Amino acid sequence: MAGGGAARAALLLLLGAAAAPGPARGSQGDREPLYRECLGRCERRNCSGAALRHFRARQPLYMGLTGTAPLPAHWLRAWRSRPLWATPTWRPRPRVARAPPLHVEAGPNWERWDIRGALGCNGCGLRGWTCHDDCKYECMWHTVRLYVQGGRRVPQFHGKEPASAFASLLNGLASFVMLLRYKAAVPPTSPMYPTCVAFAWVSVNAWFWSTVFHTRDTALTEKLDYFCASAVVLHSVYLCWVRTMGLRRPALIGVFRAFLLLFLACHISYLTLVRFDYGYNMAANVAIGLLNLLWWLWWCLRNRPRLPHVWKCAVVVLLLQAGALLELLDFPPLFWVLDAHALWHISTVPLNILFYSFLVDDSLYLLKANSDLSKAD
Image (cartoon, rainbow, N blue to C red; front, side):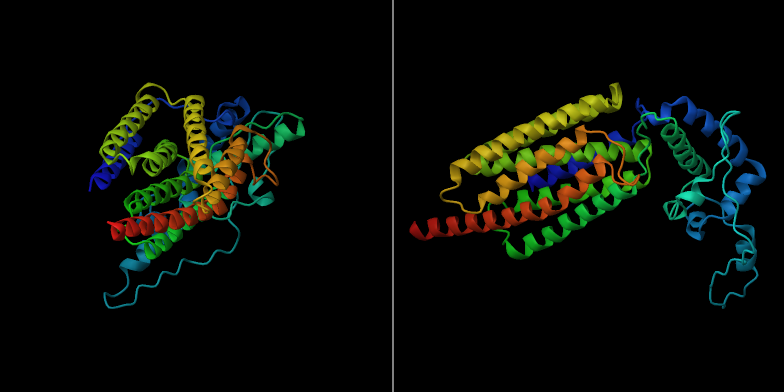
């Protein structure tokens, strides 16, 4: 019960802090003068009057139902004219020509360029983009093209990253499937059962918000992604402490849990109320990750002779830290899709599966050890 109450308190803290207004700064690419000029021109030309009505008319039906965009007038007229007993089938009127793309102009010497015709924006409507979002997408690729042509380094832009979103989704599914496997294989009487189940739910929640953020980059989704990732890192430390020390000192489990919750609250409060500092957030998570690495490795080396399954834990923590180096690198994305961040997310999918396999083996070992001790008594 105590663990569940702490998890609920952490969830409320994350949601409250994410919803609170606070200072934030965009990616370097978002602040580039060429990008800002292009964005201003695109919004003035396409996001008002008849151009905006035309954009909204091309949006999917569900965007009108959810309030993202108003329903097209011809759909409303068709619905209202049907008798009450009629089957509600939506049939938008056929288009006789392809809808024209957004026009992007930026500066007197910039050529007009339809990036959607070159690279496509398949699924933009499915993600509920507004006219402003569409302009950001167009101008991002317009700026990238000009920088590549001029031989300049391409800066990082806002986080609509399909590869990272897909990898986050795979990680979330892997965590959820392995959670179900853990609950099916391990009885609740195992000493580590509540801690491992809580860790799995914290991980599933973090990967969910990572998927959302890499699909829809807003101030709210960015905070939820960063804060939930920090919660996973701290919960991994908590899992390590409970397994290596807390089982022998159960009275201290609550104290250590309270300390970590206090640390998380201070970390989130600083990023929310003082400054959303990407460098500080990265440094804090890397430092905690290194502590977690050294702690798990020390325990694995000490227990390797009597616990043959600890090799799984050692491999996971070593490869996680090696993969985390990708987060510190910055290079142009392969095929303009696979950047360092996406590769890091992809690399964690098999490691997630291997770590949950370790948790299953270790929990069953503890259950058997407790059973043997009870029989001896």
